[in-house]
Length: 264
Length: 127
Image 1 (tube, each protein chain N blue to C red):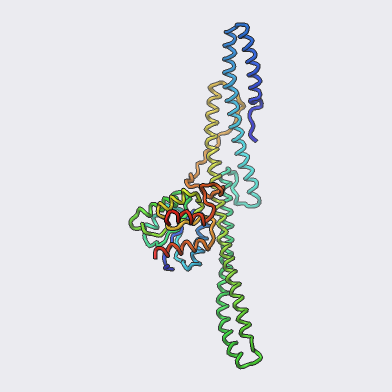
Image 2 (cartoon, chains in turn orange, brown):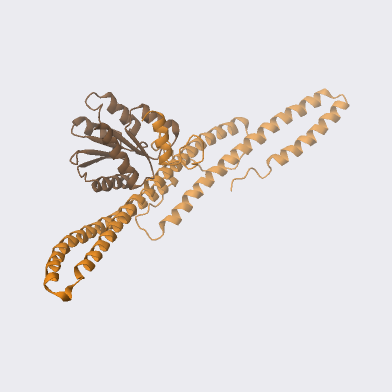
């Protein structure tokens, strides 16, 4: 939770009203010199309040990001020893990408094996065809085999259709692994955001520290000097989350329409 | 369509490269090489021998759109068919890709049927 100073702007307002009343009363008394002093006090007080407030908000935000890093860490480490220890938010999120990538490949390994089995079924079906021809010939010689050839052919056709459906389903499983790419790209954007916010936050804190020093504002000591973590800037935008936006296409048909309107 | 043609698949996610490779295999095209961004793809292309380029857009190093522009500006590669397979779905991006000379544009996530259809279409047009 990000919060401001204990006193905050409520205190500022109260103080302002008190000083204003004081100002009016000294002015009514005709005491200009005291009035000028009060105006000067008000001026300093305003500065002090704003700087302290910004400083506290900055620290709060920084703490929130640090807490996010460690919470993410403890929720990811579970029982996997390869999870990075002592890592920041960007590392943790990169780890999510790695894990999903590994799992997507494992799924595809199994699907590849299954597709190999489907190929075997296909070749067995070919061998079956030879046997069927034999049945066809025997059928003519033995009345008791009457109709067996046709019935077996029907079963064979049915099983070939099943094999084809199975192949399509397995291919769809492979294609659906693209979620890993899509989510991975979004996670990279979050990594970028967190990294950017932290970098700017550090600049802001440094600036606040300088202002505090120059204006002689006393604040509680803090320990933040975290490393800047500059990762690859991503030029493209990645997957679109808000698909209903007017400048974003929502499906392949719209891509095709747009391209054909351009003469493609 | 020549089934022996050499295809370069460029994507920074190995998952996606594998998906595209599998689908190409279903189409009978098994001569596939991979690269993980434009920077590694370009030298492979310049070496010659690649007949068809399938590329993502959003990649570190060199993006797919920059790779496409490089390809179109190289007299040896300028006529290579290029299919973009990407999550970038803004109209202005699709228009930019078209203007840069892309031959087909597939948005992720896609189905096997869509990818096959777009590849068929590209080679139909090229004759």
